[in-house]
Image 1 (tube, one colour):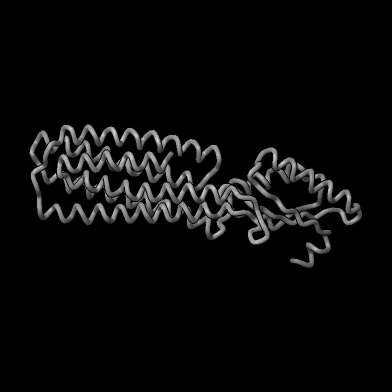
Image 2: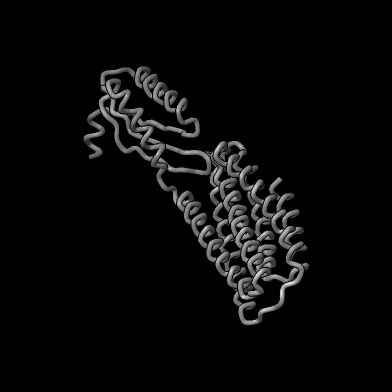
Length: 281
């Protein structure tokens, strides 16, 4: 859906450029090419991330979504730089703009289409916890923002005759797009570096504190995010006199309680007696 929608939007924006000769509209169309490539990458990454874990990837394939979002962020940055380059060239070589009324109408149609796609992907990303969908939604949102700015600026230019607004507006859009791409790259990169999942870790610790009478203590709580999954582990200190079966039942109970609240978290619990904890320190 995103790929097909992106292609339709590109065709509409390219038509708007040919009608008007506006560098801002050309930049908008060029960004749509990046959108198509990014959406294609997103579709592939979601399919791969949904495949079950195997011998070569025992933790699953979810991290492909971080890679996809990182690539999309890089493409957004590239789009911002390309828009800036084109706009700077037009600053020194201004041209008279053509049929702006029809061109702006086409641009608004393309913007509305992109806005609908962005909203749909954003809601889907929150529902499924997908980094790839979030990346594509933000990518399309950057296109929507740039398109709105272009339409407003060109409308003012058509009323005033200030053609210089065309490249200046494109430069402002380039800065906004570049920043959005940078933010996406940084967020995706943190996932690739196994950054701790702070919210999930706090909920795990809250759960442990609620069950504290059932064990002596816990330590070394670690979490890492991989796509829409979170992997966590901790050391649980139990009474050395309880049986292995009771220790197993306790850890299973904790894991089941956590799964009810956070189904995306895979928790591994290492059971140890007090002496082992003391030796470790």
